[in-house]
Length: 116
Image (cartoon, rainbow, N blue to C red; front, side, top):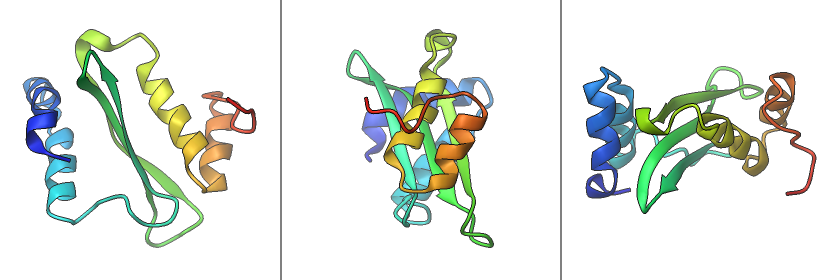
């Protein structure tokens, strides 16, 4: 992930006081959190060749049975279009952590056992 590819989403998030997007990029680039462990995932949502949404899933270090959705953000002008739900749904589909699937089912974000 390169800063120039994510500059707009960082600027818009900062403008809203949402510094967590900048922290996500910074931690990723420094290797502190690359979402590389089994069951972890970092995904983005693009529109018109621009990153407009981002979301990560980390496994809890103290209890590997649980995952935590981190740093979810969608640019303001793209909100209320289901993008945040789509990001979470893709977490459900792409991760190999069954707890993420049951979380999605519980909150009716998706039917994780369907084929898409």
